[in-house]
Length: 482
Image (cartoon, rainbow, N blue to C red; front, side, top):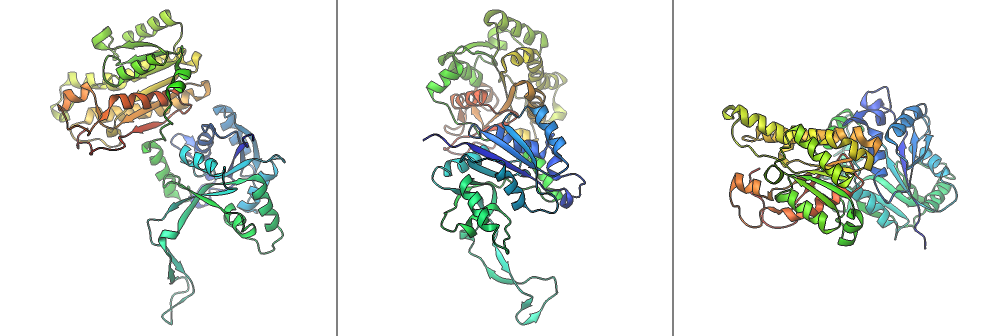
């Protein structure tokens, strides 16, 4: 049996009234992009999604078309007007269903203002549709859920607007609904056919329509995530912006040896900081699977990444020897420790130049070659980028800058196909770390080979603009040091 087409429908028919705006909230920018664009990106990056249809607030189709043109989002096939101010979400859903034609498919209905939907959630919905015809996304509640009803408490009338508790509901059986809500097209259409003949029909979501009008169709529930928040109130805009800044993306599935070889055979890779540690392991793993790898470092090739001329010469050397560049990795770095007030000017310059200016130089010098190959650039940050710590002022601030550089370059280069991502490994056993902290207890550090394998998976993935955390799955906790 052929695989059913998976169609994501992005429901963007809302307005900005509740967030105090005169434009639809899905057009508000967070993390450098309109909210709806983040949502489009999430579904575009899923290899499981075949097509995207957008239902937009009437009168605002032109801004969406401009977003699509600039971002080259080729999976989007239709941009339609939603039901408008006089309609409901259910009306907008039915407009989308009507645009799908007669061929059976899987339909993922998603709120445009949930821009932090993860690949894991998308994949879970599609996987559940292999067995079920209706799927909801939901999360457990950490709070006690109370039911309010009536205006009397103990026989005494309370204020007109004061609700009272009528029941405390069993939290273990309750979930908070999110989206996507996913269906076989024929099922959700049939549910709405019944609903449209009911004069008392009301529903706030699409699973409710199936539950009420096709009660024999079981609705599976897959796990959502707290990050998959809906932007509704003014504070949500602020919170979502911070989540985009701090939240790690899903780590791509690790490839097996055959997949690594298929992806790397004949590809030209450049690794800065490739003489030891993570950089050396990435280079070795890539070579094992057929890549042509050029490594540069201060110790092995006298390449100083903080000197633009050295980076330029490295690029020209690779081009002369291999004729192209497909993949570029920078793991070079220094780890200065100490209070800033006592840090020498030489240390300040060295730390800033190696940890921040070097990625800038590498990005600039390799841009024309990565543009030609539609290649991938991989940078490295540290967990300290989320909050500066005493004794690590230079290191933390530079690593935060690398994260912002990654996100900015991903935006700048999205239209030409260059992918830029950033790895944030947990404390890893490398010579640089041993030099800074000495020997540490076994099992408290990541193996650099594990980081290398996952880094290669990110480098070869289709995603861009992401910070990917790499963590140990077991073992004792790492020491409370950077």
